[in-house]
Image 1 (cartoon, rainbow, N blue to C red):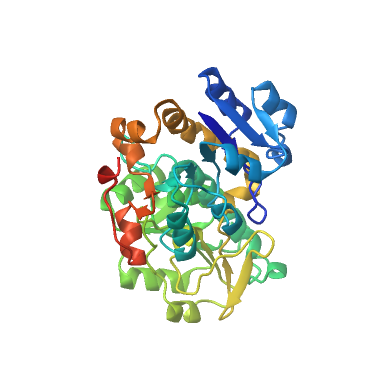
Image 2 (image 1 turned 90 degrees about the vertical axis):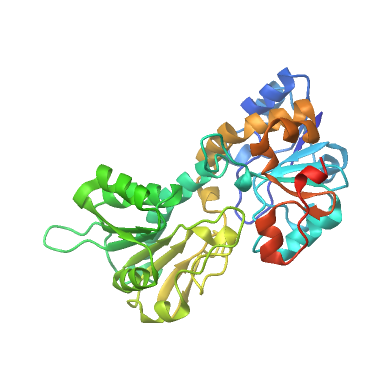
Length: 370
């Protein structure tokens, strides 16, 4: 199979779909790989590294989309990229379709076979291709929140961990999954006062066993969310319903009542966000203010630490890339239900139920197309 790796074009996105090591894995199996010139240069992956791994360097993305049997990316295809996809071509990347009807329509119109990293499941449960970026984003959320609590960044002028004689900031984390747990680790390490909310009591018990009285765990309901948010200096939104739009846990009215200069970091923004006042921002302009509350809603947070993120992502994605290349998409899906769960758009049809439901589009089971 001929695999193509275009350079990412989303604002301040420096990650790359395949590392040289991943290219080598594919070429050793007899596949051919095209990589756009300078696709990884910004994170220290040189053109020479890719050539040494067996890749063919290509000057422009148009040639890659025209020739490749499978496109491997990181972020969802931008409109110009969607327009270059063709019927039967495999797209393997993050998609986050539920809050993005325009991209969904473009992928349906393309006729391409589109696999979403974020809905591929794992043998032990969970979402193993989403997990590494959730780990990065969870840890980064505290860094970003701490920075934007500074007065010069629009915050109230708080040091996250305080100092002797001065109380630390109160960090509230909505969701105790991968994002929340990683945010929790960093916040506790920096000395913050931390409250984490979730509906999974077993998960809260696990965190209590690990962190003990260094954190407060609360069962998530409307009252506990509101009381916690109104007392918070920094709120991290890390809730997830696989493939579906994120629930709006924090209302506009809650935001209005929060402390002036408080900060919210919406890590769920790729799926529409869990604050009613959220809308996606970029690394170039990461924040905006609503009712004196600073909102950080960057849709590709891990892109800021692109080298770490690229290697972490490739560790998770390469296995399925090899399966798709070795077997073709139909056989690969027949052999692995977890990969089949990643099939979101296929031959002009929506094949992931949560996306179809949220966008009010007809759902077609993947099995009927395989």
